Image (cartoon, rainbow, N blue to C red; front, top):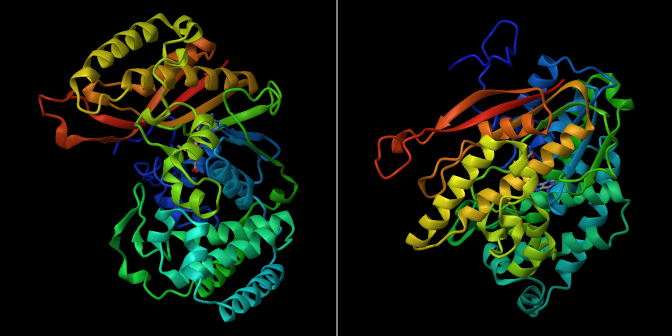
Length: 447
Ligand SMILES: C[S@@+](CC[C@H](N)C(=O)[O-])C[C@H]1O[C@@H](n2cnc3c(N)ncnc32)[C@H](O)[C@@H]1O
């Protein structure tokens, strides 16, 4: 594996960077692993960037696509301040919870004891109407994912949390504890990205949801203890300002010239529908009941990265004037790709709106990069972990395009490091584009 030029990383030994764009490292790390977010990246990449670019205590790191807070949790552990913006309200709540390290084991034990006595009472009063009660509460998808008694416990744990009058930090903590159980105790194959209620997971049969909930809460409380003890002691005085908002315009949230380093990973241009992928959680918590609710409450707030977001006659899905002006080279490339895709789609069964997807994605990325430029101090860098794609076989070199748009906006230059290539097995297939897809790090420098 080629050593990355901008990331010499550790002084002596080579560091494995291939997995930096994936959540694998974070799944093994305390706090980071409270929620399995397939879109998340490695906390090691954030730490390496902070080290390599010489970001110190009292400085400020910003992640405009905060997700579940990997950048912010890593910054806090290193004693560095952070900002974060995340548009998906459920994902935002996970990040906010991971940043609260004031939770202590005794208060978690007290909260659990209250919930436990509530559930035990409910179990005693259980009657023949349980099926009806669950049917009234949950959409079909949720009913199919659980054994009746498990769902009954999960429902009353949820009710106890939401109606229990807990202080908001404890309520968040309990909420994340319950969330992380949802896929664990489901009898359906709930692996990402799809939920397959027809496939049964026998390992989850007869699981005691209350017992699993207590294990999860105590593991999380222990994680906080471990993390506090390993963290740079300056973490206690750091600030972490996180917002459930839109990174395309943070003027009201983040002052101009206030950020020392941006480390982020935008949604990739790969038709991954973030809103849909949290459907089980949204349905379970009653935050959505239908596809329409998910569109209205979440899908419409996110930058364009899936064809399910597109309304074809909305002008947002044409290449907009600001993006056109940012770089002739980018504009020429995008116009030709969009024209190709709008013809190609008509020859395909699904007729997917990849033409609009590409235009909408780069319109949004233009706004994001402009906003990042505004908030960064001079002589700083913005780092993007991202992947390219080839919808209907038309290769879109996202890393190059983002770099060039950045320069068009005012960054002095850009640099690309390739983390890994994908799709070797299709390389020689004449039906395809013949280009290896890749996951890269794009570094934009503000002079
Ligand atoms: C690749 S994920 C980032 C994951 C993150 N690095 C982590 O480790 O959890 C991209 C995130 O951008 C969020 N997002 C999409 N549109 C957004 C917008 N307009 N403003 C802020 N966040 C947005 C998505 O909800 C998603 O969580």
